[in-house]
Image (cartoon, rainbow, N blue to C red; front, side, top):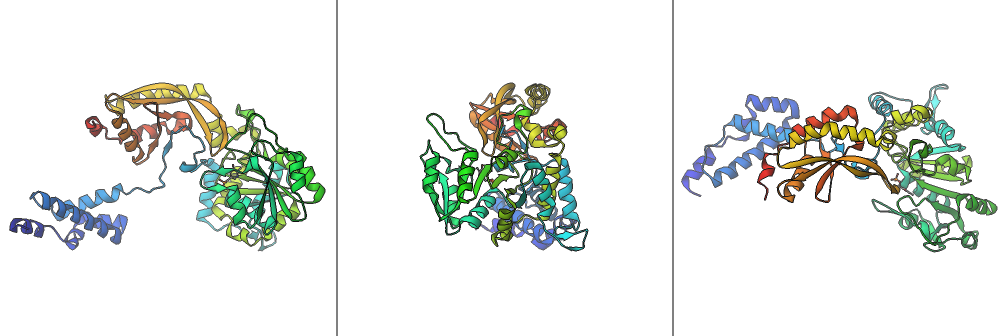
Amino acid sequence: MAESEVNLLRRLPAVAAVLATVEAASLVERHGRAVTTDAIRQVIDEAREVLRIAPVEAPTAADLALRAGELLQACLPGLRPLFNLTGTVLHTNLGRAVFAETAVEAAVEAMRHAVALEFDLIDGVRGERDDHLRGLLCELTGAEDATVVNNNAAAVLLCLNTFALGREAVVSRGELIEIGGAFRMPDIMVRAGARMVEVGTTNRTHPADYRNALNEHTGLVLKVHTSNYRIQGFTAEVGARELATLCDAIGVPLLNDLGSGSLVDLSAYGLVKEPTVREAVEEGARLVTFSGDKLLGGPQAGFIVGDRALIEQVNRNPLKRALRVDKVRLAAIEATLQLYRDPDRLAERLPTLRFLARDKADIDAQAQRLQPAVAERLGDLFAIEVGDCLSQVGSGALPLDTLASTALLIRSRGSQRALEQLAASLRVLARPIIGRIADGALRLDLRCLAEADEDAFLDALAQLDATDLADIP
Ligand SMILES: *Cc1c(COP(=O)(O)O)cnc(C)c1O
């Protein structure tokens, strides 16, 4: 190393000197000493690298403190809110359902205060954490009893383990589903300790297939709603009602895993009908499982509803304790279920349903409204058009049914890489904007942009620095 370089490096302030500045003091106040010190070390290391390459003026302690402040500012929480403009309403990777306002409030209150989670307020004795939801779930589904666990995967696992541990679980080959995130029915059966007995074929399963498989070793018969695919053409399946009769005749419980399930008939909101939980209960399955954060529009949860004696057995399984739900989610679930008691105002109050049922004309008008402001913010490098697109429900629900929607279609007047860079820059905004690139355009499907969020969307976009994008080859 040349003498002059050594001298330059020597002039770099030490960590303690930077920490002693007024600027650093305010960082310590905001972020804490440990984190601030780490950031200062990092900016000193960076400054050293710069000095090695070019013998410029060494930064002062105050300069370094300011730079550390920028660094700390840039460390945004990973779970900060974003704009889901992907067109997938229940986007599993983006956290599925957005909570209703009453659910948010209930969750916040439960976080902030003690609640009667397992405490009977009337008698002053120990209570059951599931009691808060049992009544509501029974009312909304017509089931005798109900319990709640971490998610629907847990609900299925728990039922299999309760009734088919070391025994046989019978399932049609047409219903051996894989849900995203490595939930595969055959694997779950193994982990639950059940022996899987496959019946029928991929496309056709008949009552006799089940009848031949049922014996004294059968612990459970499983019917699985093929939520994320359809088998079409030369097909046959045994309906839940017929299967329930078959199972009842030999005293084996039938579990109907509805996946998403719905508590209301979605056709009333202009959507394609999914089986409702009430119908599944009425068809005679002794146990029905479904998710909390798919079409139901609440927090992640798995519900098991059905016969009281069977639900009691489920609740006695020691695994239940490992899969239970905390007070925050229970409070949000309770508030979400309450909304279903007033179907007239459900679509207005439940964001999932509001987004799904949103009128195309309404989305159109919003796109027209936003187009000029977005064009202005993105500058000359990009052309912004209003165009038709198709939204999806997501989370494997109604996979073949799309919803007519409207998007802002952003095209690059420069290179395609500039468009990709734009999408990347939008993803790292303080409030990220997530769209989808298809057919050479970045699509921002506005279905899930609430009118009340339009200003926030434009504010987020205003943070974008599009100047560098023009230089991308
Ligand atoms: C989604 C789904 C599951 C898993 O539910 P999670 O709540 O995501 O755990 C299980 N079975 C079916 C049929 C599903 O559609």
